[in-house]
Length: 458
Ligand SMILES: *Cc1c(COP(=O)(O)O)cnc(C)c1O
Image 1 (tube, protein in one colour):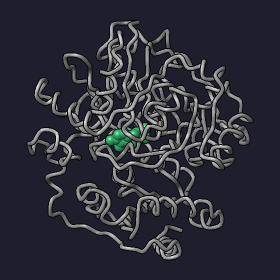
Image 2 (image 1 turned 90 degrees about the vertical axis):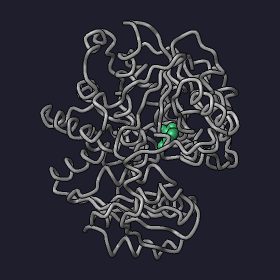
Image 3 (image 1 turned 60 degrees about the vertical axis):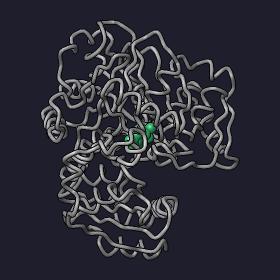
């Protein structure tokens, strides 16, 4: 399988090169040249484990890693999960909850970042290379990325977070990791400042080249690929063979739900993909109107979805506009300069599976309360957005809602919703009072680049 760019200006490249490239060098996103169909194999996959499905799916997209090595990578990546099924489905009375939070940081990002960390290590060993990962986080991505690469040779990781503006628990999940290749930077400023420094540093091609900078954000194709696996695995847990089911996905950057679109494109019988947003509803507005228009970011109780530009959306748009790179270049340039782009009805008519709606803070809290009192099941606020939107759409097909985080990561929201201090997890309890290490810096890019230069592998 070769990988091409949504903007059409990258020669087809191999899987390993796509992983190392991250964002496509022409500014677009990398996608596989085709989606192989597995429709006629699904019956045989029925009783496979998560790891076996992962191996089958990955083999279709990765032809430059020998199969034994790939098997080892898969087994190693998912041995850090606490549940035997890796991603089990909890069957509630009206819908299934696909629990993606059994990894080391209790958020779904572990499913992809455990694998990506091991992939980086494997490729760097083979190529005798070194990598300095630079990232900015408002919470979950940073700790999952750190857990994915901590202690690995040939990789240093630098994660910026806005000092005092993540939850104390989220900061602790990062700063309590003491391995010497992990560098947390608490930046005096906002998440936007952190992200601005990151983007500007990646755009400085001399600096990027000199220090072999790499990215772990969800534009990396390997992250999307890893996430397709649990759609197949969840299907096996809840559906009759051939039955069409729907998935509801609490969405921010469109990575998780795009993986569902790939699973559907490969022949998994998916009826609808429900794109659930909080008050930051740029994607819900798009699917209902064809207008993709930036708004102001609202800060909510589901912070991982507080996003106004969805970095993976371009991948879907490419298929919606019938794989036309010139059209993508035009649309993305227009969005960049005006903050708005309108997709014609003839292209919107190509969408036969996405449904979208927004939830809100009151409804999210009420959903958490309802599921706790009626089903004795505690939803985290992101998952509650997905459940609320799924319920409001009243589909005929069975619905599985992706649960993207463990409720214990968001104790304040749970307390607010239920009036009780219910959300606990031993992994998080163990962090309290832990030793921490963190570098404090101003939001001056020169200061941060100097810190990077001092501590980078080179
Ligand atoms: C990252 C994240 C999301 C959003 O996922 P995308 O792939 O960015 O759409 C939702 N919930 C939680 C808890 C997350 O960490």
